[in-house]
Length: 322
Image 1 (tube, helix red, strand yellow):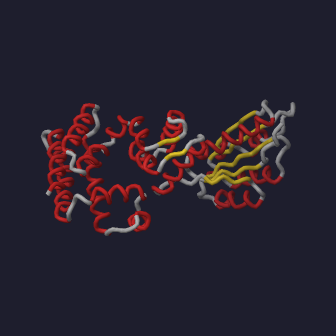
Image 2 (image 1 turned 90 degrees about the vertical axis):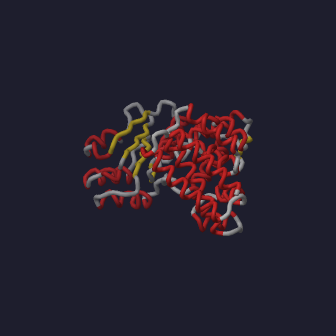
């Protein structure tokens, strides 16, 4: 039999996937020790102290119990004091998880995390991942968690095609690791997410700013056939041009230093450095104007948004060729 999990856990943060994992992993550990372990979950603000007492009382038949108290930042004075009372003297066989987003209006709710830490709670931090570098680290960690490894270029490709949703990123990494025997490269990501890559418009933009006329038009027409919103393709084109402009203006140098200065992930800087070699300052300035005009056109000023996108793609290809 495995050792029983700690009786008091504090899960702090707003990243839902990480919070849910902390709860699931604690429950799994408890059930490894006692398969009959019961699980209860409730929102703190919806409980009275007597109801909390009942939830956290030991079982008559000695089964284990895991209790997750959600949104502890909403706790009022009475229920916060009741939670701390149980935390100071946990019932035998009961594992208490307090889920707190780190904020809170009431004084007692705000102070809960600090007090629970002092009481020796096992703490799991689940901050929202807002920086590109944090999401990159998450993807790499997910690959390791699944028993694989993902190359840096593949990390960038995955973030491009999937976006910032951690659940979708985790699901994609898991499937890619399974499909590639644990070695995920950029080609594998592009194959697996071919439709999504084109749907987001990034492939259209990448080919256009690289001067690939035929490839850009093919990707654009494919995206339009799939029903991609015009504004998403226009946004991808604008983002590609802006990124090239920012990286080119920053001058050459180490991609990691520039990434820090510009607030971009290193893979994006490296890609833009490669793309910028075919552009000059006049071309970038003209391209900025072109994508700004396109933005207005796809939002209602153009009678034919498909045609406006095609003209913009061709315009970018021509500007790069100058």
